[in-house]
Length: 200
Ligand SMILES: N[C@@H](CCC(=O)N[C@@H](CS)C(=O)NCC(=O)O)C(=O)O
Image (cartoon, rainbow, N blue to C red):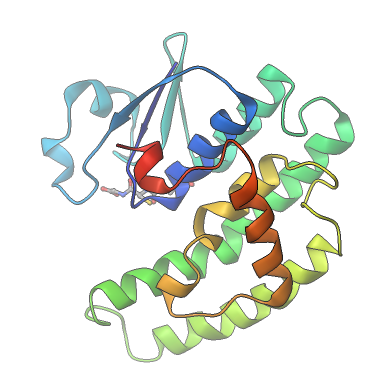
């Protein structure tokens, strides 16, 4: 099994975290996401149609789109919620919420800071910040006082949210109190690593 990713990709971190938490052996290949797509290695270009990370290759079959990869890991290996219909349902719901909301505004806000707002149309950053405020409140509602999104133990939904929730401050935003304590619990898990340790 081979995971293509990069330390600056929260999407790749979601998958790296899931594999690590589940203790699934794999090799990692770092793809320079800041380099021109056509300069990326041929083996990567052959498996990633949008030239994006993450891409996970299992027994020669390539899987793309972080949320879909998380669902594949959970169902194939029966881990991180994949051992029950209820766990998978929860995982799907949280993954899709994250992709549409938190995972839409936080990467863009982080990028806007990196490029000093250049290329972002007027009002875009304010619009994204407004979305983040709603998403932070909904994070609290979805977590609902449980330790993890999947209850007592983390699941693929937690991995999805971790991807960019780990960088809330880098996006210029503040975590809610519930986000802060959830992140502490996530960081304390034995499988959790810093992005640069997932993709050396
Ligand atoms: N919807 C995709 C997003 C993947 C994505 O945006 N990957 C970025 C890094 S975070 C990338 O590979 N960018 C390089 C490029 O597009 O050339 C997912 O969930 O996996």
